[in-house]
Length: 559
Image (cartoon, rainbow, N blue to C red; front, side, top):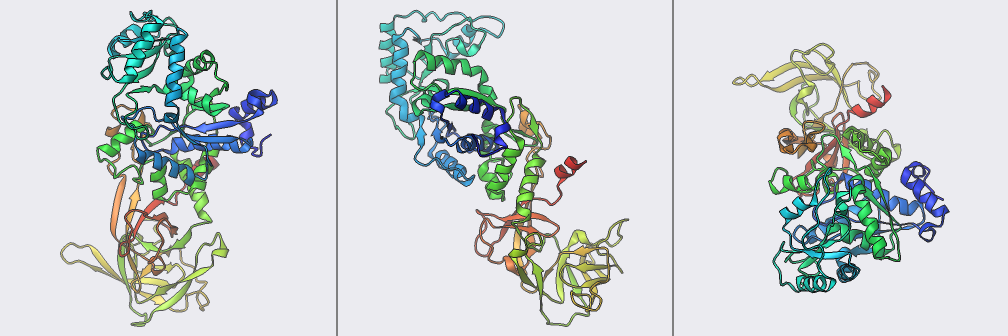
C-alpha cells in the first residue's frame, strides 16, 4: 500500500492502512498542512509538514496547504509568504491546492446559522470573565448561561446584527449548545464566533465577526474533502468538539482526526508566542536569526532541507510527548554535509607566522582536495608563501601535556604543505601578547619530497597572507542554557548571553573570495559554515557556523 517501509511502521500509517482496507473515505488519503499565518514556522512545524505531505505521497494521495486565517489581529501577508517559501524549501508542493479558511467565511457563517436553526447554538452576552466562571472546573460542572434558552428567532436576529456590526468587540459571542456538565471542558458550550472589528489581510473589512479556530478548522477539513486530519496532542481533548460539529452539521465528508506528539527539542524555544516575543523585544535580529529554530533561521544558518527531512524521519511519530536531543538534529546536518560540502581553510583568530628560510617573494600553488569523502568534487590550488597565519589556539608558549600543536622548538605539519618548526616568539612589549612567530620549514617535507613521510604528531590548517580574503565569522551556540528552559514562564531568564560570538578579523583562503550566498563549506578542523544570505555582499564576506565538527550525539549512540 505504501512505498516507504519506514512510514509503514508508525501508528498513523497503520490507521490509514486499515482505513484503506475497509474502504474508509472512499479508500483515499487526503491530508492537509494547516498553519495559522501569525508567525514564522519552526522545526516543530517541519515535522508536521513532512508527516502530512509524506503520508499523502506514500499513499498515492493529496495534501493541501491551508492557512487557518481566522484571527486577523495577529495575521500578516508576510507570514503567508514565509510559510509557502518554507514548505517549498523543504521539498514539498501543494500544486493547485492552496486554500484559506477565509475562503469559507460565507459557508462557515451559513453553518453557524444552521446550528442556530437546529437549536444547537445561541448568542451569549456573558463577558469573558463571566464565561470562565460559568464554565466550571475539571471537578465541578459548569452552569448554564442565562442566555442559553433564547429563542431561535432571537438568536438569528442577534447573530445577523453581530454580522452587521451593531455590537462592540467582546460584547457577544455565538456559542455551540452542547453540554455544560460534560467532563470535557471543550464541550461546555464553546464559543464558535466572536465580534472583532479588524481588517483581514484577504477579506478586508467585509467581516466584523470571525469564526473561532475550533469551529473553522473541522469544517474547513470537511469542505476540502480531507480524510485524515493529523493534529498534535494538545488537540486530543478538542476531538469530541471536532466530531460533534461534523456529525451535527452532517457534512458530506467525515474527516478523521488523529493526534501525534509534537516535537520538543532541548535548548530550544518551540512556542510561536515566545518566538514572537524574542523578535518583538529585539532579543534576536529577526525571525530568520540563525539562532532561531524557525525554518527560515535554520535555512539562513546553513541547514539543508535533506538534513531536516532526515531528522524528522529519525525522530518518528509517537503518541506520547518526549524531549529530543538537539544533538540529533546537528548530527543529521553533519551527515548530510560530510559528502556535499567543499573543504576550505579559514583562520578565525589569526596569528602571524613568518617562515624565515622560505624564499622572499615566492608564491607556491599547492593542490588540495575539495572533499576527501567525495573524490568527484576534484581539487583546487591554494597559495603558500613566506607569511602565513594559523589560529591562535594552535600555539602555546608553554604547552600542556598532550598538546600536539605548535610550541617553541616543536614541529607540526601544515595541511597540504610542509613541516615547520617554531624558532622564535615575538611579543608586544607593552602587553606581553604574542603577535608573531618565526619558524623554519623543511623544503623536502611536501608531498613528493624526500622527507614527505616524516611523522609529526600535529597537523594544522593555515592561510597564506598572499591572496587571503578577509571575512566575518559568526559562531552560534544554543539560545537557551538549560535543556528545558523553554518550558518555563520566565524563559528569557534562561537565555544564553553567549549564543552569538562575532569574529571580525578572520581570513579565508582565496578560493572563497566569490563564494555564492548560501553556499556551505567545511572549514578544516573548525566545523561547517555557510555564507550568510542577508549580510554578505561584495566586499563583505560573512559566514555562519552551522555546526561544529564534534558529534557528541553520535558518540553517545555508540556508547
